[in-house]
Image (cartoon, rainbow, N blue to C red):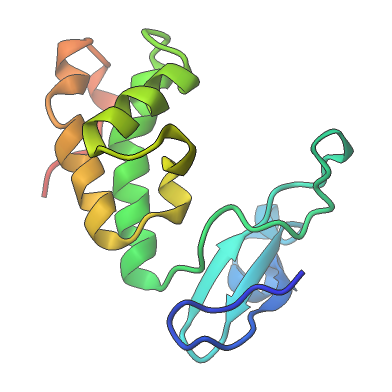
Length: 142
């Protein structure tokens, strides 16, 4: 597999979690694609022969620190929508795709840029309250 960094257009390197998170032994066995010059990385799907995953398929696009923060914020407000049990994950992504005006097949936070992650946060604002998601699962506003 050849993963190219979207920041510098150079090939990324496949590394294990000891390189990305040396202080997180729980992540040492995971694999990541990393662009050292850009300090961008992305995790890999766990191996799963049922889906044809050998453990090298990226979970999304390479992300620098700013994009990683933006994706974390987007997941923090979006994931509780389906984890609450009020809708399935598939239904939540269909709802989000409609709100963003994109195809459901293209609706994957791991592939979004910072601007689209911000749109996710804006789209989800207020929805958590409307479906009564407990406070501890909602992202806090800054």
